[in-house]
Image 1 (cartoon, rainbow, N blue to C red):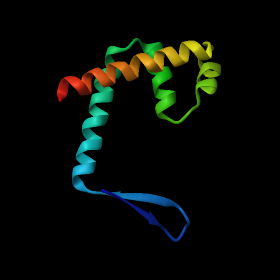
Image 2 (image 1 turned 60 degrees about the vertical axis):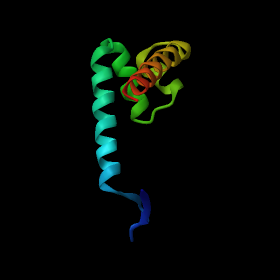
Image 3 (image 1 turned 120 degrees about the vertical axis):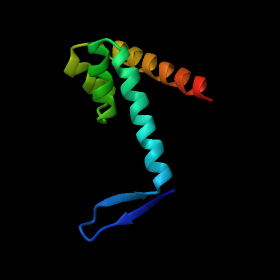
Image 4 (image 1 turned 90 degrees about the horizontal axis):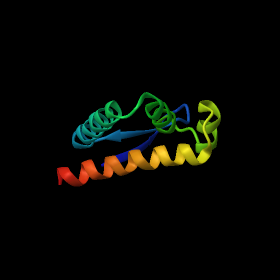
Length: 88
């Protein structure tokens, strides 16, 4: 369970349970493993997206079309989905 906590500095953070922390760690390891299988230019696009950048910004940073960025992200989501399905 995540619980929203407001600090005195008006920053919002989340407290997570141990099982949530373990789950997040496993997810990060899974993402890292899948990223290692991707070409370097794909990893760059995915890293930007994970960092919170929008598709248009990523396209500009990488000098790729928005459609190409969307395709790369879709390919990664598909691989992640397949991996999660195989684990179940």
